[in-house]
Amino acid sequence: IAHLLCCFSLQEAGPTMVGDEHSDPSLMSFLGATKRNMLGNHFWEYYVNDAPRIVLNKLESCGYRVVSMTGVGQTLVWCLHKE
View 1 (spheres, one colour):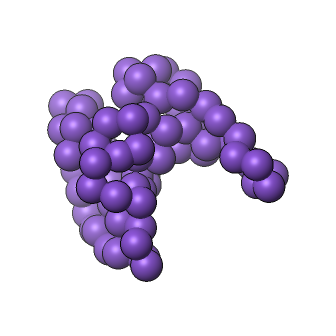
View 2: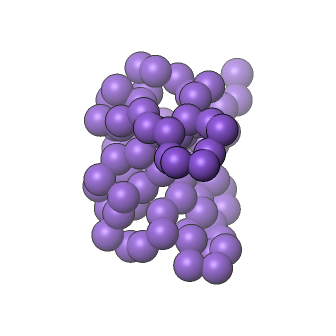
View 3: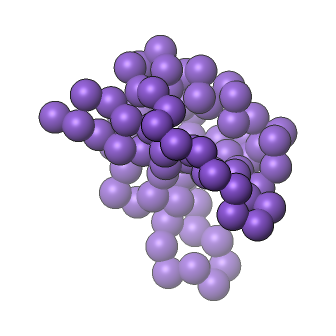
């Protein structure tokens, strides 16, 4: 089974958004993520205060690998894949 995960950050130092309300709770727990709802949004998201490089290293240890990365305005987005 293939899994796709996207992480994004507004800055290189964090916080890093690591999931939405449908994300795997056990993976979010492993990352130390907190679930929040930002004012004005109609959805929940998981975030960590860690810098993206810390999050990416943790995900690599779980078998995820980066397949693409891009910048959208001041936001950085990484897409990861796990088989």
